[in-house]
Image (cartoon, rainbow, N blue to C red; front, side, top):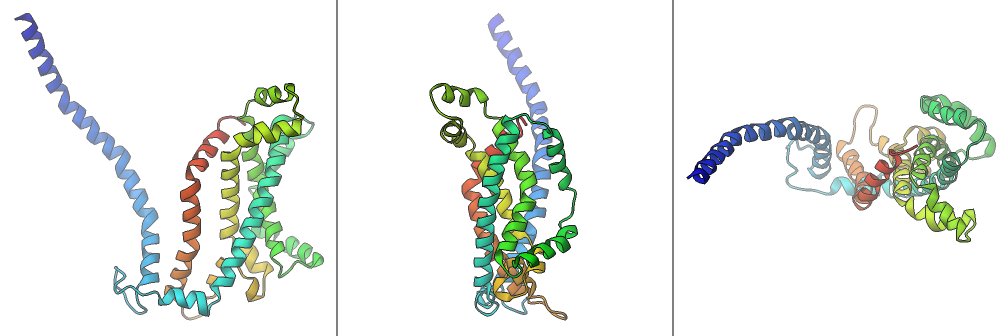
Length: 292
């Protein structure tokens, strides 16, 4: 009998707690999922309209692209010369990614593993450079590149984008290297490895997520850079995607269909790359934030 009373009491207690649990669950949904849904809608609605403009016929105002047409993509690719712009953006982006990653790897390792005079001042200077707008450096950079004969050369974009990507990349890479215990590297040197061999054999494989994170940031910044390409390039065969797409906007009119189609083509490779490397990217960002 006592067991039955206890069981009934426990049943009433659980049934009494259930409404409170449901209320807490609804409150959690309101606090968490509703803001996330609003943010997702705010983020995706512009992309939706870009796809609508790219796929619906010219002159249509329908909110849904029907009938679907690919005439805007043909216009961008064949008439505007988008294939050349795309190739130039890929070349500049890949070269800047490689240069930024290699220099940031070496510099970040030095900042993380060695203590030298002026190290703190150097790091503070790197941070302060992030407050300088890129537009302020256009005139000096233009004079330097003109003296070197790099105006209307893709190398000017590679050098400029690499220089502006390096401060943040160095700081991030320093954090990634600091997250790798020095004891692991030291154990390899005790086993007979030189410092360079220990770095390539032990440390470098552990820095793969960090390299992906730094390289991704460098590539996206270079891919989207409009100002340098506009100032250093005057020949259409050297334009990158942002500058090439700007020429679809005239003084009195704009071809929004072609502009949207070019934006879709420019976004697809970046989205595909991030879909492949997202797990490395998230792990790299969290690893770099642990210690530095």
